[in-house]
Image (tube, rainbow over all chains, first blue to last red; front, side, top):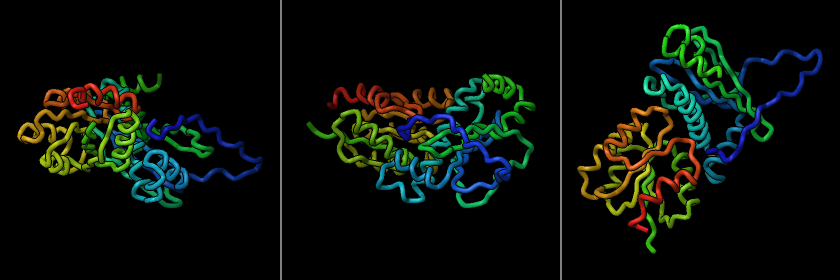
Length: 159
Length: 128
């Protein structure tokens, strides 16, 4: 909505027979917003640098989107909105956890890894023929095992 | 008809642009957009006077939106200036607190220009 576009599910092209497995290393930008309190987790949005510039252009306008600070700002705000709305849907948690300020990492061949063991749900969306990977809650399933409040929210999440 | 003087307060430059663009899409007769990136800057703008409305994010560094709201009654130039809070979080407690200390409404991100118009226009009836 803020980028004036509607995302559809991203379907990756079928791998060629005998092709090598896709590397877990990432390139481009990853925006992160942490949740602390009744639920401890990390929401991330990842895409290529070109896709991030396109998104920022849609949000901020042509004149500013080539500024790397504006691109990071736009990605951080998008991630903030995803994390905030995710939290809002977990009614038992909305008033019991807080969001961190957004952080944006950019570069080539980096790997995001949680220190604590966690299960990662990742959803890929198609934005102008390029994928945007959204992970609404890196540690949700892990947190759900340890907190009564999180248990109920986990149930909401799966529906 | 005079142009409206609106202050947009958000630590994200992108969000300030989005809010301003949404306001301009409502058809309101906006003057130059005034901006602040935190509560302290916002209060400095408020002191200058003649604002018609303030739209402020809640979560900001230096001074957040709730602190701004609590400071406004002590500023003569802020008297009668409505404030709409903008929030990403789903915390009803924060929204209730904002309304209890003087906010006239709130917008939850993401929002549409129509939602901005719904919140802003009724507060400017006496001005337009």
